Image (tube, rainbow, N blue to C red; front, side, top):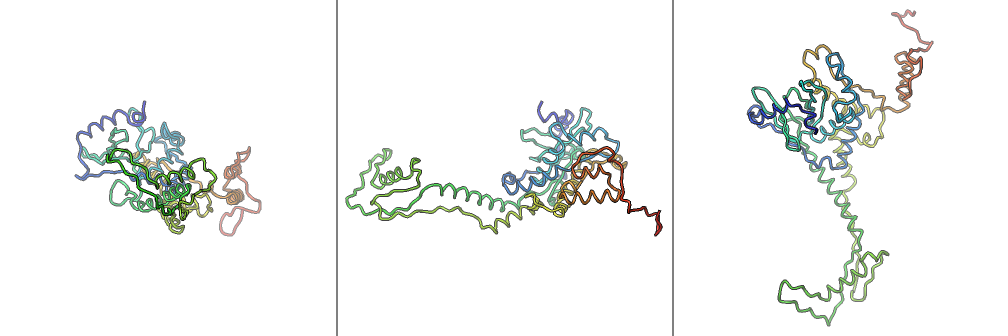
Length: 399
């Protein structure tokens, strides 16, 4: 059984066939998403920025609160679908969003149409259509198969959303930067190839007795070699064959002068390339120190609040809209992300936080040991407090 039938049930396929033959575009317009330029993910600077973001995002946990969908608690925590664990699900979702500024989260249903999981898909080509006053997302897979899903049952996460009510913008602002990066890479490659060979500019001496050979009248007949052709072949044979691995070229007195040609690669100046890289990193919201893994606690906190947290707010909002009814959400059922900034803090910061937590009594020994990456111990769930602290009952009176 392939991927398609494991994600979409027969009911979804039946709806898709109906919509394929009887639909109209929403509001009479043509609301269609087309994918971004594939070169985006094929550029090293851009891929490194996207990877740093997605790699950091996949460390965050998702949890289901409330009693409406107890069955999803274990599923979402470990394996949102049959083919992905939670880190992979988040990584793929973040990557698709970065490349296309739009990502779809489609429901994985059982035979009754009840959500049993979630699957992220890239918006290769889709249309927003309307039938019987109901809005659908009509999606086309790479293999040509089409599926239509009710709009309220699909989660759409977008970045840079402006001109379209459903999808994010394309990455047109990156086009000129990609061209510069590609030109830089091609210049380096071609320069290395050219510099690997021996090249000379040779001035031929005067040959008074030389006569140009008479060429055959038939244009298809092979051309007779002249003196210059033979001389060039002899020079190349002596100097440029593989057996000449000593790097020394030899010329006879047929040449008045021989000047070596130096091939240097075209390289964009360092300040310009630094500007290009910084612009790419700013566009994706990933500072260079995060990509290098050389960041302080303050820098990572800023990255979390400016990049990671907005992503998870959008992701959880999309999942909640797919999964719970309005009444269920009002009753406290929701999907949330669980953050722990200390996971990325320096060892000294963790130690100071754990020590303060134990002293003040808001951490147990085992909770503090968990922060430091240590296993729990017997009796470690008891709270302790330093003896030079006391409980204040009110005002300046002490118990």
